[in-house]
Length: 172
Image (cartoon, rainbow, N blue to C red; front, side):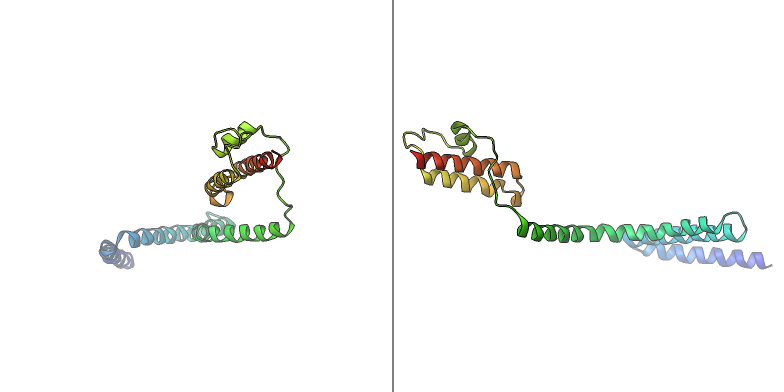
């Protein structure tokens, strides 16, 4: 008699809960499915421990799985904030101990410096002025600066080309 009554209660609960489940929006349905699956999983682990089919440490490790899923979701939300904080910390430390920027030791030819800045003409004859060099440098560095998505190598090349051309003009 008890088994029939238990069966009737379980069937009634399933009917009521399935009706509620159908009324939920998809996000709530997904969340509910995860909760039900975790509950069934934990229930099976508990039954296995009570009946002696599984050691309690194995059940404890299995019970951690739903919590690990929750921690993963939390970590994926907090990771960008932590990385930004870490980058800001490193930037603050690097700013105080940073050496002044030195140009690369490899000497760039004048024609390559002109090509890097997108200038054409003869620097010896005065076709290229200091203002033209500064404007070309400013235009390129605004696009290719490391803080704006560029990289250190390109910024260094642009700065090296500007410095070389300005030195050449001043030497002439």
